[in-house]
Length: 462
Image (cartoon, rainbow, N blue to C red):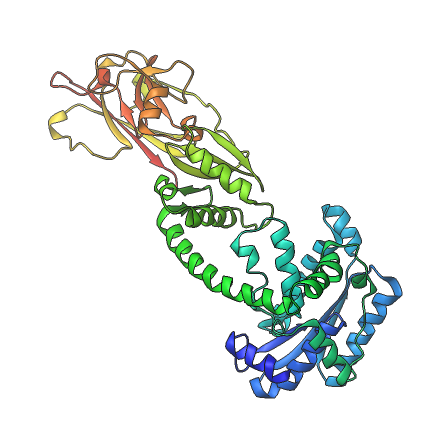
C-alpha cells in the first residue's frame, strides 16, 4: 500500500523534493492512514510533515478524545501538531448553512492559516476512492455535468493534495489494523442521517452486491477518464474566455460572438465569467447559465438578476455582468454667464472644464480630441449650462437640419443604459450644443461667418 501511494503521488506530481506537507488530521482511519504512510515516505520524498486538527465542538467528550488521540499520535511520530476548537454549530446557524458545509469552510481556513504562518506549501487531505465514488454518485443525482462527474481531483489550487485517493476504504481499514493504529471512529458516519451516509451505507453496498463487486474501482476509473476529457475542454474554454471576455472592476463583458460557438464551450465561458467577476464559486447553477444564453438571444437593454449580487444585461448583443446597486450620478446643473467664461476653469464631477474665447480663427489649430470642441461664441445669447439629460431632450446633430431625441442618439451610438444619465450635456441658453464626447449641434458650428469662437475643454480628473 505504501508503494501504491508512492506511485500515485509520483504519477500525479503531488509532492516535490523539499516540500513541507501539512496533514489534515481528524483522528479517523483515513487521516491516520495518510499521516502514517506519508511519514514512512518522508525520507523518500525528502519532505517535512506537520498535522492540523479541528475540534468542531459538536460531539462533546468524543471530540475532545479525538483531539487528544491526534495530538498523541503526532507526539509519537515527532510530527509538529496544531489544533483549534471552532463552534461549528454557532457558525452554521449564523450563516444559515449545514454543519457539514460550515465545518468544511472553517477547516480549510484553519489549514491555510497554519500553512502560511509555518511555511507549509502543501495541505494533504485524506479523501479516498470510496469518497470519490460517493461524491460522483451524489453529483449525478443532482444532475451534474461532466465536471461534477469528474469527482474529486488529486490536487487543486492552494497546494491541496489527496495522496490516498487511490486507496479504498477497506484497504485503509486493513492498513490501520495491521499497523495497530487504533484510529478514532466517528459514530455519526455510521448513521444514515446525511445524504452522503445514505450513499455510503445503502446505495454503494447495494450496487456492489447486485451489479458490480468492483463498483468503487469502476466509478474511479470513469472519473479518471472524464478528467482527461474535461481538462481538454477546460483548456479550450480558457482560450475562448480570453478571446471573447473582457473584465475590469466595474463589469465583465461577454462578446456577442461567444454565443455563436459550440455550446459545450459557451456554457463553461459563462460559468467561468460568473466566478471570475464575483470571486465566488457557490450559488451559480446551470439554470443561470441558460438564462444568460436566453438573454443574449433577447432584445437589447433587457437584464436579469443572478446570484451573489450580480445582474446580466444585454447591450446590443454583448452581455454585461455588473454588480447591483450602482450609484446613479447626481443630476447636478451648473449655470455660467456668457460674459464671464473667458479663461475660466471649473470642476464638474469627474471633469475639469476650461473656457477660452478666441478672436482670430485663422491661427487656431483645431483639435480632434473628443473632449475639446469649438463653437460660434456669438450665437450664445446669455448663458452656458452644464447638466445631465432630461426627459424629452433633443438636439440638431452636426450635418442634420431637424432635431433628434437624445435617447435615440444614445441608442444609435450603443451607449449602455446605465451610462447615459452620467454623460455631461452642454447647453447654450436652453438648447443642447454638445453631448460631451459624442455629438455636437449643427446650430453652433464654426463657419466662415464666425467671428468669435469659444473653445471648451473637458479634461478627466486623474
